[in-house]
Amino acid sequence: MTENIAAFEAIEWTAAGLRLLDQRRLPGEEVYLDLGDAAAVAVAIRDMVVRGAPAIGITAAYGVVLSVQQHLEQSPADWRMRVNRDIELLAAARPTAVNLVWALERMRKCLAAAGDEPVRELLEEAARLHREDISANRRMGVHGANLINKGDSVLTYCNAGSLATGGYGTALGVIRSAWDAGKLEKVFACETRPWLQGARLTAWELVRDDIPVTLITDNSAAFLMQGKQLQWVITGADRVAANGDVINKIGTYQLAVACRYHGVKMMVAAPLSTLDMAMPCGQQVTIEERPAAEVLSLAGHAVAAAGAAAWNPAFDVTPAALVDSLVTEEGVISAPDREKLGEFVGALGLAG
Ligand code: MRU
Image (cartoon, rainbow, N blue to C red; front, side):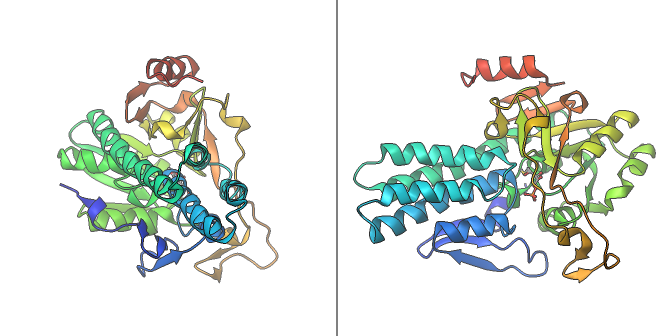
């Protein structure tokens, strides 16, 4: 059984504040950073110390706890106003993942209702959110694994594992669960330029779990499919719009296009906190553009000709029509579209 969530804590509340595993240093070094205020948390999210949609939401929630601690002590007269300002700061750290604003909205509501012990109450809410995410991933893992046949091989993209979530992972949760069920023939992972989340983080997690992983360059995926070596591509999501469009790591769209051409199935595993029913379609989502330097260099070394420009969108939009299965903790939506998604959230009492 892959019990990876006990093996490391990428996000941990300690007596010293919020402790984050610095994901920029993996797999070479396991370095932990202790953060003491919300401003430092916003910088850590922006600079990719922690990344992955659910993980940045959970981190920001703990950031609000730090903010309450700080301002209650330093500015008792107007601490709530200062905390609300920090919430805005945290929300602006990265624009695409809806989990970030979703988690902050939960913390804002908790703050509004807080009584005599706001630090304790907000810390409990952040820890609850963290626990709920792990539990959602476990359930998603089971639902996703049920779709996979014995002997299937899968390809995953970016990192949608323990590092990207509260623990266990979304896409990697499905892969862990399917592996435990003895179903998987081979697990492939794309490197995922420019940050190499696949090579550095997904491979690190799977190797630690003793799940054999074969890394491919991003431009090998279609050839792998052409050779009939693959049955599923499984990814996470940063946001799923009301019509089922999936916003995820740049390159997900081209994988989905290649999947359809080659008859490979596309599975997206995303918790309900990633569904954005207020967003009509994927084209309206703000796609983060990151610095050109991330493309022009690799591990701090220039790899491009001096003088070349670069375009560096961090995410893309996969039309719902290219997604075969959307897996959530509450079940699977096959061939998701606006109608099916509306019915699904309506049945759960989450509509609107
Ligand atoms: O830029 P990143 O590393 O934050 O991008 C992460 C992804 O695109 C993940 O696939 C997504 O957040 C889902 S994580 C469960």
